[in-house]
Image (cartoon, rainbow, N blue to C red):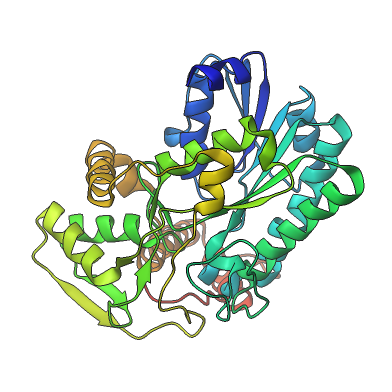
Length: 384
């Protein structure tokens, strides 16, 4: 800890996506390590102002990584270290919105890398995905050398594009990069929603007395990794010179069955509604996920410290403490439909008060209806 403090003292750190769950926890740790300045660049597309880390040495810039002016502002302080966590998340979202996924995860990382090269950063750490890089023909436990191009979602494709770009900047420009391959992050800070991870969604539904939807048999496994352990690994990727140029798994190195996860969360929350089994999604082909963390242990001294059920308890405590904000912020398809209906009713009432629209002009409700036809929502049901 003291060595880490002495490393970050006097340094400026940029965290793109720093208002998200992993980013927020990382920013708090960097602030506690007495970094001179921690800059957050986040467009709040999947995060919220109430959940942003606060501190005298923390600066928040609301903006998009595709926005040149915001990038110039973020890099004006010439950060020593860049953590690139901003992303279009995740698999189902990328299936529904593949062009946006490519722009944010492809063009976005290219722009950030260009600015990082311009200011000559000491370290560029990219949040890749162990759940995406390893395809169906990769052997388990997943080792860093055994990547695959047998992929099933645009998110998997663009996460691999991100690693190809970081490697390109390392090989051609000697930019000191590290590719961090995350496995199934969970913990305090992640707000549930249509495109969020299974654990925050399970807590949300369970605390609201709903059955927990499992897509599959429940025997499927995931390598759930506590956000605090991921942050430990990310910090070490900055402090350890041996990590430069490497791809490194950050996982827990053990499997949890989804059926066990659901039962434990229902037990924690006192939810008697049980479990509802749903049809599996077309792109969800992996029955098991398990990381090999030998490389992280050897290079970084990385060792996950958080027992899974203890991590669930910490997450549940965060949900209880922030329930009002979470209820207000969580976005699911059925809730969005209710919000749209209320909006339509409001504008229809306004149009009636104002009278019939003039020739050649549409009423607000008609415009909303036309927009729905032009941009149909093609989302999956609420499921993991």
